[in-house]
Length: 317
Image (tube, rainbow, N blue to C red; front, side, top):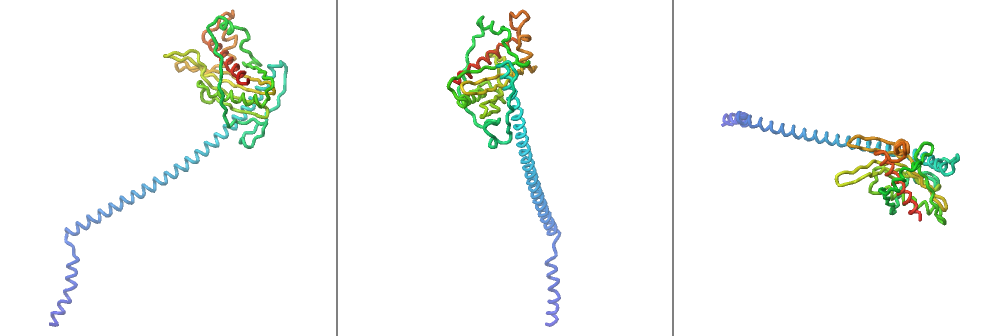
């Protein structure tokens, strides 16, 4: 009996060893299972790495976009400041030229006190970019360009006035009893509405105002239409500057810096009024007829000028 027990105790480890020994089929299944687990772990690691990479790229992209936006804002601010400075200088030059045109003598003008940071930091007599827009109906006068009388008008010598070699129209409207502030408000409304007309192009705007001096500068970009039909539209981009200066009982409107951008089947020409619509360039030597192309620019420009100045006079009443 004792021997039997000893034998059984000796066999127990062998039996346990026999139970833990795997068959080849079991080993293969175990290896396959371990392989699948390793593949799953690898795929999860790849997914985690891809997610981390995507998050890092998104973060870097957002930081780059934020930096680019900040840079763009700074660039626009700098451009606006530069444009405000340029327009203020131009306004002073326009005012001086207008005074010379009216008096025929040399005058001196006070330089505009220009503040180009923020409107909130400006004074009442500084040139600033307007932040509020007024609206008003723009009334224009229809011109019968086919009548003989009107055709003769376009041939008149000196029809296109030049001041110091620059095409410039200046007209003072008398409005007895009106204050400079009242006329300024009406002029601002008129010019604002003018820049919102259906034929206006990008960049047409009231660019600078000076309430202290009751002055307004508008840069106009518009379509000047020569002819229109169902099949075709003949027009040029017409660029010019308008400046209104108001005083008690009167207001002066000046139009100058006239240029054209004419596109004919992809051939673009940039033209100045001084070398395109004046007597020398738009009328024949005998002064009996307008030249074919420059003549139509002269006619359309004069009509547009008349409409603007008539509308300005009506707006002040």
